[in-house]
Image (cartoon, rainbow, N blue to C red; front, top):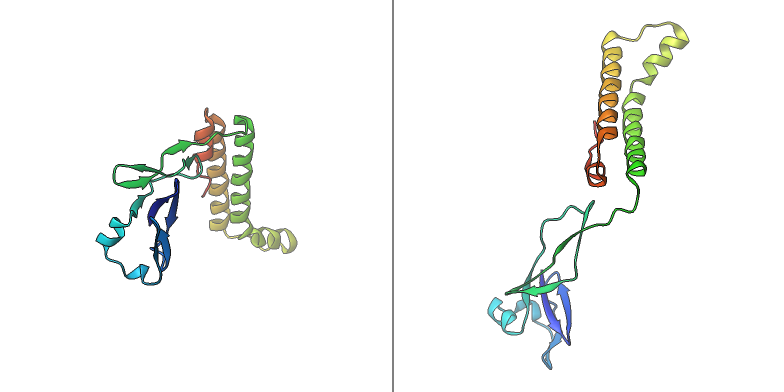
Length: 156
């Protein structure tokens, strides 16, 4: 990715445009064929995007730092309360567990309907899943910061 400052505004490009105006000059066609030295001479610089976790961070406005354009990483303000975040995370967990259990629900329904026993391995898997869910629920409830709740993984 490249960027250039034109009239006080930094413009970013995924690749050098084929035609553009810079410093009063028109580059009409062939912009993509310019050498790296010519691109630098015209004022284009590389864009360096820092690693970021978009769940809890965001990027500042782009700025020139040394010889590259880059961004600062800013911590997001989390508007929800800790209790609201935990409630949402617990809901996600229950949805995930429900989806997993639904794959073997037919065994349980068949047993209730016809009396044909559910294989013990299926009963054991379902019990282990419920235990895992209980453990994760306890861990979520024990979290003390909003950031920790947002970052908590509810995948089984």
